Length: 343
Image (cartoon, rainbow, N blue to C red; front, top):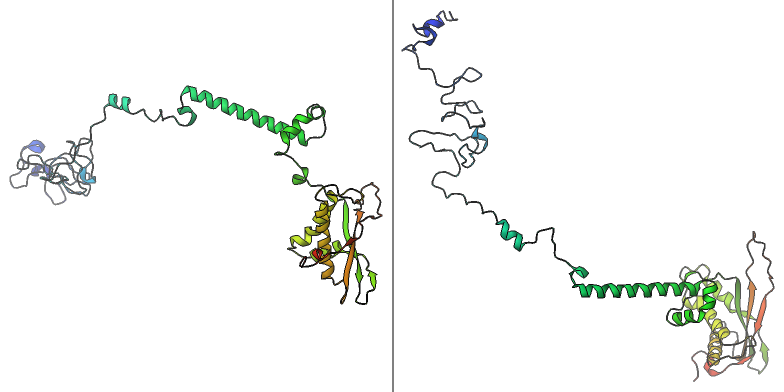
């Protein structure tokens, strides 16, 4: 007897558990009950607890409310739709998408024929050849020969340059002329480009003048150190001019290269180097107003004073600290040597 005082067996009818239902009771819904004791109207309940109208779930046991494919291979169903089947619907899925009457989905494109694809498309593993590989065998041989010739020429050139700059050795003594013929004049090498020799001497260029005063008196000035003046202008200057650094030095180098130790010209450029040096000297003397008021510079004399750079304290080398002078003869000054040139 249950809590309401009725016998549960009596409710099932006079025939017991397997007998006919009581006429006064509502028929029991078909289908198994849910785990919570509720009955499913036409099949398993949906995830939200509502009964599914058409009966069983899909063959894999999943509900079609999540958009999974239908068991009959049809399109996916919209989540939350119900599958309703009956005699008036013909088993159609009223919640399926697209709805009845809509245009059918396009059929998938047929797979390409493997036979035709293999003949027309070489495939990714057979990329078209480029570069030398695309040439015919005859041209490939020609390209290989040209590359070999270039490699041999480069090796010979590097070897010749190495022997040219290397110290004297057996090869340079035996084949010195061939090396020189290869190097000069196009490939001449000079260590000054990569490792210039550090200066071991200080060369100062000095000048004195013979000045004629207004009263006709001649006087000889003392030595003016033009190199020292340029040095003072450069010292502390972050951006010294090219003239201050190199003009006087290059003029003296030009003169030494075109004259012998007795100051005689050794070539056609000797006279040019003398004029160039004399004009630079006159420009410096006029700037310093050596002639004085109304005086005229009649002639100038240039000398170079060379002093050795003292060795470092840790060195045992012994050198002379006595200056060596190279004095040039007196040069008469012409109008072409003055500021503005000849008039």
